[in-house]
Image 1 (cartoon, rainbow, N blue to C red):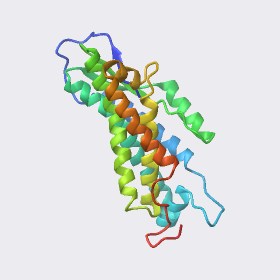
Image 2: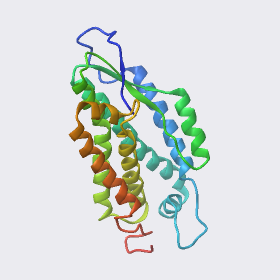
Image 3: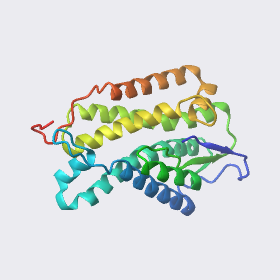
Image 4: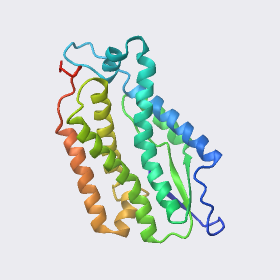
Length: 237
């Protein structure tokens, strides 16, 4: 999500605390809601013996403990993808002398949960709010940090999929790969408050390079340029 710039109401230089108690509470709520939403999204099971959903693979690998494993894996994917994006904004902003903290959107969280029930997801958990003396260059570099985290995570999991394409591990890598590619492309759209508008305002070449890489990752997902996920290492597809 895009970092929100506020007026400079804080003393200068701003206090560079890593996380306030309020921010930790907001992060906890956002991650809990996102985890619940993704659990709803991936809760389906298949009756086709030739096709296995993510839930099916977790049940096969973890048996009676599958619910705990299912929620735990979704939690890890959520933390890596969404918090990685937001913390990219936060830490770059702090590194440039700004105050920055994550805050939830209550209505956005409700929308996230409601859409997940219907089999798709509009995720609007919140954003990093930033205050300080910020130039267009500062704003561009802070804004590019979030999508850059997603691009790196997507590329890393795509590479891992070439070697670990079985069972729950392979399915989790596939979800992480596709989710981060989608997040990167969406946030780099140069409209309104999205990161892409701020990056493009700062540097057209950087925006072109970023959207090109993110677009290729998303294309790799839709074209399935990675091995099929199998039930076991020896391979029942």
